Length: 111
Figure 1: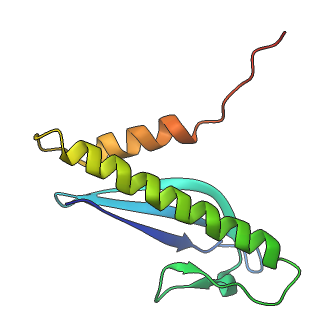
Figure 2: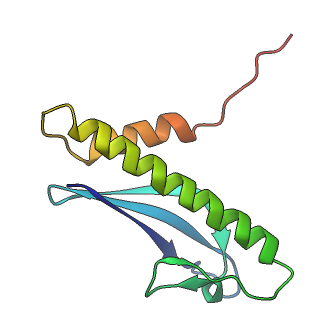
Figure 3: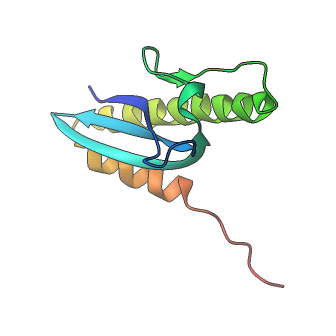
């Protein structure tokens, strides 16, 4: 069974926001999927792999990112379940391919 975890990669520049990414593991194959979620190191709980929402001016942003992460993880779960129901073995690649397809910004055709 595949597993998906949210992870945090701090910025190498002191005082700058780091990036939240997803780690997918299936059959000992690991894939990392980048997000556009940017937070500071003190806004991340490493033990629980989630965002810490404090009483700052960023709390609305952090709450929004937390909801987006919940939605993303549910979508990963549905994708893994669908791939598992196909009665064939799969790797982390189809999961990351579907993520890339859904996460890609959609363009609106010009009138």
